[in-house]
Image 1 (cartoon, rainbow, N blue to C red):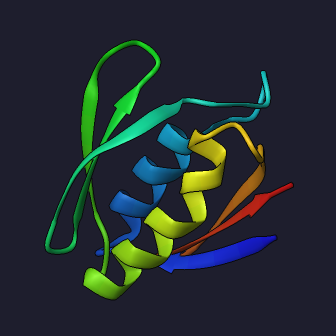
Image 2 (image 1 turned 90 degrees about the vertical axis):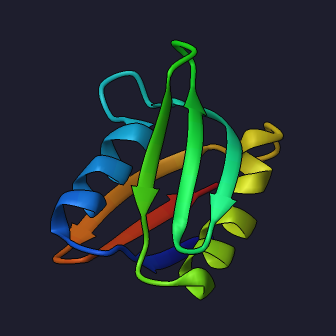
Length: 93
């Protein structure tokens, strides 16, 4: 399964990609979604830190939250991420 989510800008896309998936170890670094405020998603990471990512709009936040939920519940794993300007494509399996 894959999804394409639009971020506010390229920097936010790169930040989200680096927070979601560590390619070398093939692990997901996000442990939970702490909060959603308008177009902002605040996530907790394995190192207990929290980070904010700005997506294009509330609709993109909903798409991302729905898609990532099964990963956070350990039902799926992130396989890859790819950046296309302000969009990030996330693949899970």
